[in-house]
Image (cartoon, rainbow, N blue to C red; front, top):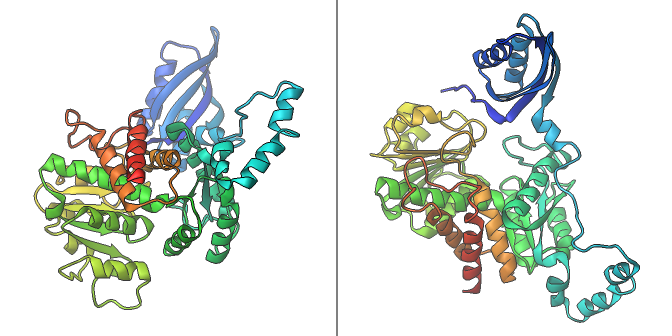
Length: 463
């Protein structure tokens, strides 16, 4: 069931080489990279004369070890000298990815007098007299805190707050790029739920919303619930709700492709953590036929003891037939599989046993629960979390528009109705003329998506 990783831009390298000048020089370089399994994306000649050529060769590789193999392949070419190897991902992160930029020019003493002392004191007094004016007169109206304790970062696990910071920076950059929302990373050097709640409550006055990120389950459920009870601004755990919104949108369109209704299908979900639990709750709210959940204890069914509250809730609301077998058995006759768990859990034969025209969302990153190439032999629609595969289910389709809508509406909480509205907006953004088995979600660069989601959330908030 193991599979080879595909080259991707996440492991892109630029290799500066010097070689003997001849008509076939560049061709020999690109051939060597291709034979080593890399993908050449650019060749730039830096310098040349009648004796030697210096060129920068940029290529995608599958991982760090594969990148090293590509470099060795180049070094072994006769007449080629590798001068320098640059990891393009690390270069992009040098000095961080975001900055603070003033919205107003500060060129004169008059500018300073209005932006800072003495003029700013009048604005402070106005807010003290009417605290609601903070939304109108400060950054609060457009600012979100991206809060993490580093306990469940991507697929890396508990790596701590400092190591989580590059992810939170990236999240903040996505907020700005796709939603026009000013977001700032807040990484906390504690994994004590009480301290996290108290800290976020203390910093909340500066923000119009809180985006919780990469906090491990089941703590994330308690932290979100408590903060929602304490704060008068929306609290949104993206690992839960952003993922759930995008999955529901994708499943809505996948069912359109295969001609099935959500109320008639049985869905198997592998992974009942933050994302999986939120996915299942949203599917239930939308009226799914039945769900079977699978996690470390096996299939969640009545009869299991010692479950945490989140799993106990799932036991009480899913698996109407009380199936208690293994994951491949749960798939037999199922209409859809949603994986938010671990790589290589299934083989193509497991997909073959599903119902007619099955749907497979294998979302574990970087390696899905089943090789998508194997899944496509049997499934009508396949989606992953990878950018190098069709139908990438990516949270960036949801969270920028969701927060844009909540901030514009002055919302004080995030609701299930907002989630359902956002999912419908994402699904409808594809359009009937483009909808097919390889296009069930819009591109993350589709400029229509975030405004459509924001409008839908704003309407749901006003309702």
